Amino acid sequence: MDTPETRIHVSFALPGPAADELAASGLLVTAYTEQTGQPRESLLADAAGASGLITLLSDRVDAELLDAAGASLKVVANFAVGYDNVDVAAATERGVIVTNTPGVLDEATADLAMALLLDLSRRVSEADRFLRTGAEWRWEPDLFLGLDVSAGATLGIVGLGRIGMAVATRAAAFGMRIVATGSRASSPEAAALGVRPVSFEELLAESDAISIHCPLTPATRHLFGPAQFAAMKPGALLVNTARGPIVDELALLEALEDGRLGGAALDVFEWEPHVTPGLLTLPNVVAVPHIGSAGGATRANMGLLAVRNAVAVVGGGQALTPVG
Ligand code: NAP
Image (cartoon, rainbow, N blue to C red; front, side, top):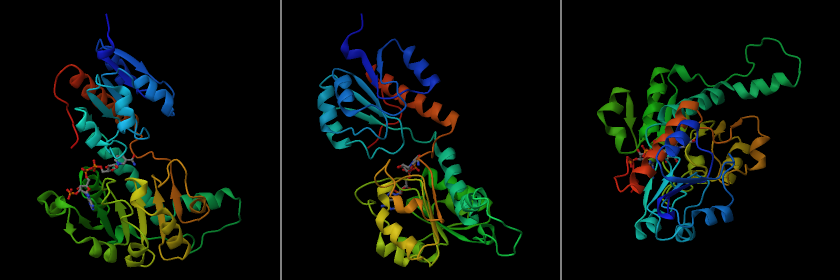
């Protein structure tokens, strides 16, 4: 007979393979089955008495939720590599293990960062929107001129971790010069890709385009604000597939409206899912709804890793990918 101590609650509809594996674990499972994520009050109620929670990045895992779950809770398995939505200190105080999904989404997220960089630099979405207006056009030498990425443009990678390295691999293949910050910027793997380690200030000054890949922490919140936009090359491009609050979104809007920056491509937003309306009226902004890891196989693997973490800890074993 199942007891509340062996129950795992999932706050969303897991991808099929992960849902199947969780069902096969023999544990009692409850799940909120809408793709939209579970409303707070309902999540608080369903968490009560659970041993494990599998959560989305949009779920706030704080003292209130941990206390609502109660003393039975052993693990929070976040369905994301970023865990800025989790109060890890509050979990640790309560003896709760927190896990994330590192590694399985590197390639998919790097693919999207590169897609956004190419889109922005060659004005693909802007040209597509233009064509859809039905406006008259003909081939012209200066129609939608953009940045020659492959002619040695410099890409600045802020946070050369797992995803940053995957972006560097792609950028190197496109013939870009690469500068980066973060401890791995000085590693042999980075050197093999031609990455030059620089200070953050040098990166701002030298980059034709900057791609952000650091986590959201107190130290990186508003890492990009008015001073950083002023220090960037005039006309430089900004790509953010990390977390919205790393960029001061209103300051970004101002830098774009002033013509200080050449454009921005955004997968993430400061007040997600709200998008600062002014951004969506600018031609040199590409905006997509947080789809960085949205490959079918990638999402299945994220689900499997989250399930394996939760089942392992609930069963008294070690988490595969604990944070902290
Ligand atoms: P990771 O391997 O831990 O890499 C993060 C890198 O950021 C590390 O190299 C770290 O450098 C660097 N860093 C930390 N603090 C920094 C700071 N203050 N300034 C500059 N760099 C700093 O993480 P990952 O797996 O690549 O993921 C990175 C982030 O991408 C996640 O945290 C998540 O928020 C985001 N993400 C978004 C999506 C999406 O759907 N859009 C998908 C996946 C991930 P050190 O080595 O020096 O600590």
